[in-house]
Image (cartoon, rainbow, N blue to C red; front, side):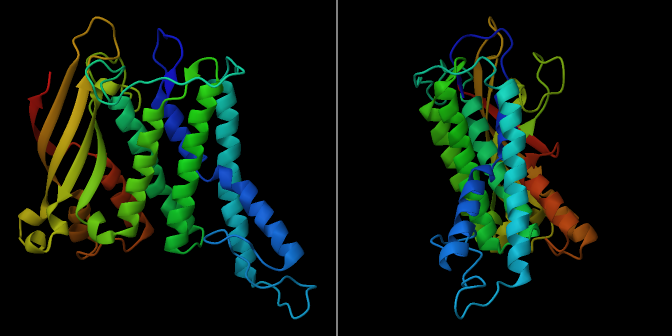
Length: 327
């Protein structure tokens, strides 16, 4: 998300992105309603995938059988998730994001990605990627809990996440305060794609995580994990437990190796800009949880799955790092 004019207090893009994720499924609501109307009128759906919940002709069509009750219930649950998210984010956006209104033209800006002279040293770009990735991972579980199959839940989550973040970027292009950033959009799509890859390839999900780590920076007066860029650290984590050769090693199975990136000093004029890469060693909390409370088994209950998701997305203070300064 690129601002059109300088701002004395940097707006929290992350709050916008995190809230936008709630709307992740929102833009599919109209498609759901239109598809259902088509089914009622013609006896078939012209869409495929998770929204294609009616395959038999409706009552009143010769030879038709009424759809089973669970179809109706699932459509209702999906629509509630989709519609509620759309309403929440639309209302929040109009009152907080675009309160200065919209112009008649579409404006773009070239912010770059991770260069030293970019607005935030690339931390905002990783924020876009992580927000989309986290939404795909989290809302997959929400749609599964609603009764969708795993495959349908993944695509519902992924398509709606990509759609809403793209819509927010396009709206920025027409707003008076922001501009459309192609770099932001590229990172949005990359994050959603990474979420789909790990959700559809469990053998990779067992081996790798993409995480956000946070420690309050000296420039921030308060604990602000989503807006204090200088305190954020993004990590690609490899888990020994996911590799056959290490899974049964008594100590090694609990360890993780991470590669991280952090940029500091970009939020306040006059501070030195610094970018670092990190190599870290951390504790696999999902494996600790499984071995300590679930007889070594993972994902056995909803509580355990929720904890595992948190451990996959956020780096808790169980790691040590060696840092290598870029500039």
